[in-house]
Image (cartoon, rainbow, N blue to C red; front, side, top):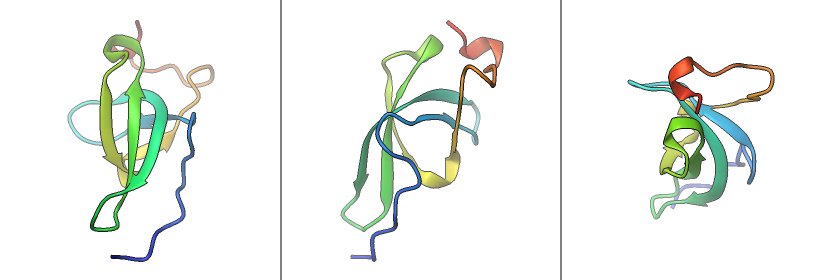
Length: 77
């Protein structure tokens, strides 16, 4: 197993997925290391995808403050 990295995000942090075909924001509800030692985050999405849970690596997440940064219109509920 790889040495465990220090998590950049913690429970209840608001984050946005910034890469790939879509961007979506949500709340960190779990932080864990998989069996290969890779750090993963479970994000409960908000807005149009509210309640959906996705598992992400740290590389595609950024801190997000929905009060300061308005998500794209398609992410607003």
